Amino acid sequence: MKDEIISNLDNPRQLEKLYRDNKRAFKRAFNLVYADIKDRSTAQIWNERLNFENEEISWGGHYELTFVIIAAFIAGILAKIPAFTPVTSDYFYPRNIAFIVFPLMTAYFLWRQKRSKKIAVISSVAILFSVFYINILPDNASSDTLTLACIHLPLFLWAVLGFAFVGNNLKSDQYRLDFLKFNGDLVVMTTIILIAGVFLTFITLRLFMLIDERMEEFYFRYIVVWGLAAAPVVGTYLVRTNPQLVSKVSPVIAKVFTPLVLVTLLAYIVTVIRTDKDPYNDRDFLLTFNLLLVGVMAIILFSIAGTSRSANSTVGTFLLLSLSIVTVVVNGIALSAILFRISEWGITPNRLAVLGSNILILTNLLMVTYRLFRVAGHRNQIEHVEKSIASFLPVYCLWTILVTFVFPLLFNFK
Image (cartoon, rainbow, N blue to C red; front, side):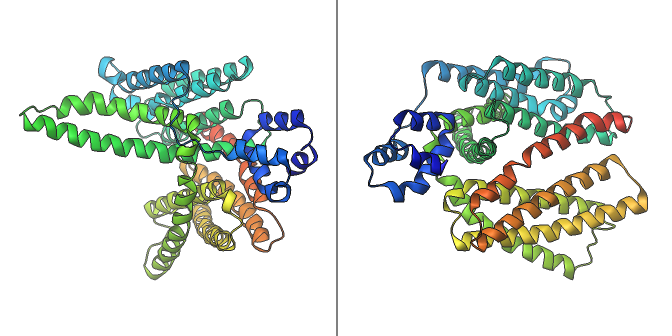
């Protein structure tokens, strides 16, 4: 992209085409080469166009705002299905909680990005099939495959959302990375909305208490549930219409948490060694170990995706490299413990699911660590680290499909 921008500075039409094909990639590449071409008037114009920051909040078009309001209302209705149907909460929420927001967010991107009918049909069929499938699984509270399907189904719907996000650019690592960045920004924005909602709830309830009106039950049953369901939808809308709101917050959070997580993880490993905790025989400890692994892996992914513009910092690169190496060690311990338990007590759906997840994460981690090592040695660029992340997303998606839709059949719903 950088070479194409430089070679087409005198070709405004081609520059515009490159920009419209992938706006984020174009802006990133342009900012990297701007120092070398800043004397050109064309480059100066594009620099102002790309980096001009509008301090005002945009609410999008009238139709877009209407769409989001309707979607938020529908999310609230879906969240309240157990309240006005014979379906119990214990049955509905474990199986269907992901359907409250992900289909609406997917519809938003299909509509806003003007995706083709083919993309819309595939996304719709995948969601409808998921609704039907998860709700016809036998209602067996002791079924491991049912639990695994309920846990992995939101990840599958997240993949469907990513499919709607990238559209026809499935093979583009940059679009996949943009999707990861969007998720990081969405987490920040949704958290801000929820914090504001907590504050509003506290103030509201206190005000009504002053006039001797107790409305906690009504407020939590309707207002809070509706707000929780609508928050991700509204957050998606705000992130897409006002990217400047959180585009600078996510990298800062990533920078702050990377060293903190590294120190915490090192301290945790040392403490594990000094205590009698044994991941090879302690099932709950092994589960916590794996949850820790997934969480740290997510931090690494979002740190690299969210701080790519400043990832040339030597200190930042070495911190990420150190965190990756430590996480590889943790993954190795967890993987060996899983293999030990399988050799001792045989294969179960849970053990096979954890084994597969650990192998995938370890493989991806090794790729990321190798790329970070090359970046630290100034033999590579951070873009290659990003590609090692983006290129592995379809593999995670395939594994999610396998656990969600194949495991229950493979293990006879046990």
